[in-house]
Length: 244
Image (cartoon, rainbow, N blue to C red; front, side, top):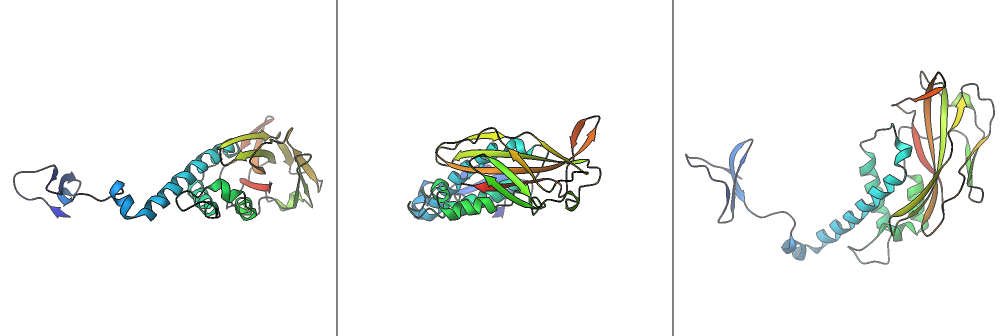
């Protein structure tokens, strides 16, 4: 990179050199660079990586939309990039396709791919998601929580209750289509005394694809019978509790 000097200032490309204006003044640099059809032939691995990254990015975008309503009120600028890394890892499990054409859908068909998705920390600040034993019954699409103690929850300051919701999802990673079913909000107040409770969706979405159940944990302040979501800290949690 060089700096232009003299009375006449130039802009554009001449004889393989780019003349341009920047915040550092009038500069010159050799033209070219970037990724194009020529470099794709010279460096095929770059194109293969870019193609697979683009595919994983499409999966990422649709996947996030499948549970977007469960994230209302919660902000995490790292979630997109962490999910992208997850899907790139799952894509690597595709041992059938050639490089550049490996797909998340084939990786998700493996047991390890499902395990990677189930173990993903959607909300790293809240781990574990919920104290107690969590068991999901696919036949009745019911999540049962046992060995629970409300005193171990450590509700945030100002919270009157813990709110729990269950989302069951059928996600087709090949066609990028999904169906979801959400349970009613279960409110557990500070004086909740039982050690066991359950959440259930009316139906379990079915069809070709991967089925999973997500649990949402949030805290609310109740004013005149209206629940107000409390933001921030480790109060909010979201995670997959079962996958099939």
